[in-house]
Image 1 (tube, rainbow, N blue to C red):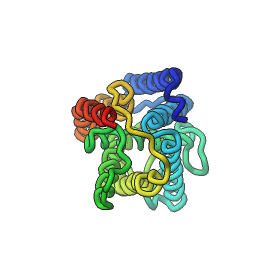
Image 2 (cartoon, rainbow, N blue to C red; image 1 turned 135 degrees about the vertical axis):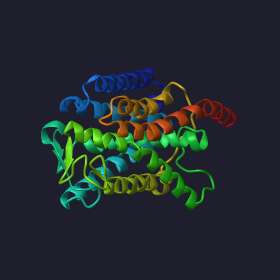
Image 3 (cartoon, rainbow, N blue to C red; image 1 turned 30 degrees about the horizontal axis):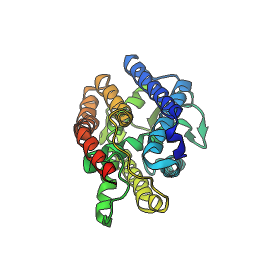
Image 4 (tube, rainbow, N blue to C red; image 1 turned 120 degrees about the horizontal axis):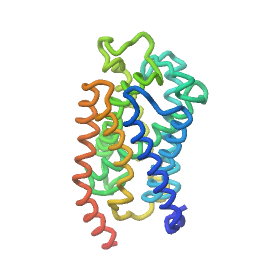
Length: 289
């Protein structure tokens, strides 16, 4: 798999997938507030998004590591969603997906959902790694203690869950799904999203990051560190920051837009601020090896 990195077509495909994602986000911004992409386009976007971040992962951690990471994320999310639906909202709250808008299902879970979540698990790992370590991807540090690993995975999970403050109310406005018995004005909710959603999702994201970093990644060969590239490593920012832009400039409510600005927007800007330092420090380390 790593031999593919020397082929020009690998990066050309990566560029095309990135452009598909950028165009999709621009169309979402241009559409009237509350209107979503057609279901078939949504499936194409989610598939391109997962392949885009998977190729970026291959660039940094190799094919086997990337396959392991996304397998854990996609299968883990599908399992939690299926259990949640089967037991009336035990994890995230009792939600019902719209069959027409969300598309075909695997069991009771729309096909597009676990792949979208799997794709969105990767940018927080990159953004968090640049913020904390000035490296594109840090799965484990030499001599790292157990507590430090827990803190790092918790930070990754917090960056990931920040997405929910914007996408959940927006998806409900679009009619993609609804929480049974709740409306945007329901008490003890964030614009109709039950607090159990954010808690359950935080635990799920933390669990997937922790399982990969603690148990899976150390058992698979990790390639040597690559220099942080302002071009290739802009991909996580185009995805995470692109959705932050969409959810901020075209929010379903001003409160939702502000929540996204001060969560996703803050993480994105801080990490971009650290990006030049990450380029310099990673170049120094790679040249010293």
